[in-house]
Image (cartoon, rainbow, N blue to C red; front, side, top):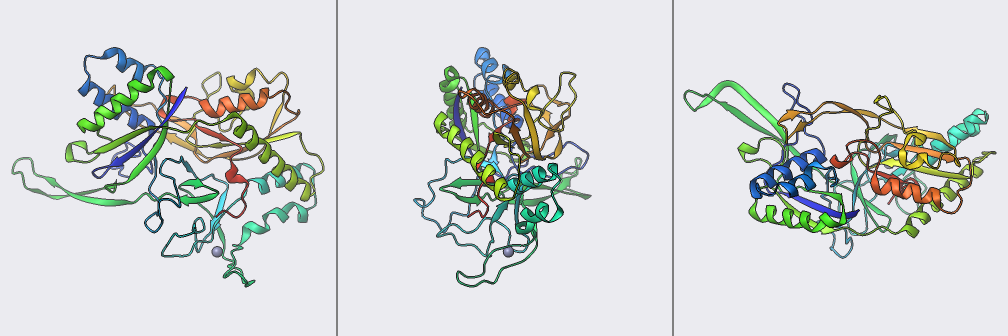
Length: 429
Ligand SMILES: [Zn+2]
């Protein structure tokens, strides 16, 4: 499989409705993979109606995995581009375990960045919760049990470099999307606004009395980004098609397309290849950090290996009877079931939400059946009861991360990250 990234720039306002309920005008915060797939499929029908084989390969065989496109606009006005060589860096949802100051929320300013308000940084609470869970299993006393959370009650940001005065405001959860470069994270901006329109009288062609509606839209020039996964032999075909469709300006995304909404320009480039050694390093670093903190907190019994799974997109998991799953059961994943003879896994902690997935099938012109998914940003921590031998577990986890898990992966569902470094940095710059 090859990985290319798409950068999508809106050249008109963009309306992505999050449901098809009567009067539902709320916009989702990103462009779903199914919407992207449908838009490109419609463009293909227009540009190359005779090339049915190509159409089948790109859009029907589920060989090409289209991404959810996340907002990729950042507060870069005040930065020189050399400071953050980031326009091609991945954008990811902020994990559910992230916490920030309620009064001054957000990642701390990166050097050179100017903002209207101060921001007190983001802390991650995954390891603290994991340690709480481990201590709880050992039936520790209440005081040591709760000690990991002291830094999550109130903001520890220090006003000024030398002073000891702390902010001490309440901490809150933080949502949205972020990008990381050199351990500096920035939150993506997705500016939406309400567009108000009047109804038109069909007989007279003038404004109809008492019909006034509004819709929430993304502003013009909003950027989005996502990685497409596709077989090597389809890469050139896909790139050529996207380039042609962008040149001909036929790609329309979202609703209100007959009213001038949804014009986009796509830029397709090769994404950076991930290296096996980097992946193994990341897992070891996470495991070591988890182990160190647990020992310091007084956990007596530690398992040989720990890793975390963070959902980069909503993930639809079903069991053999097609019942929706509310958590990740590693033994039921086909990629790992081969290893379950030699390894046993235990879920130490999870922070998981469930959401309903609705949508419209552009190809069929029909609503899609509803699905239930684990929300993006959900985070789970697992312990492995055996020391991983000769790399087989690491290799299997890497395959999971590369290929994703669960159903409807061709529509951007089921992207995951394993032992994400986000969870290790307690005070995030
Ligand atoms: Zn604060």
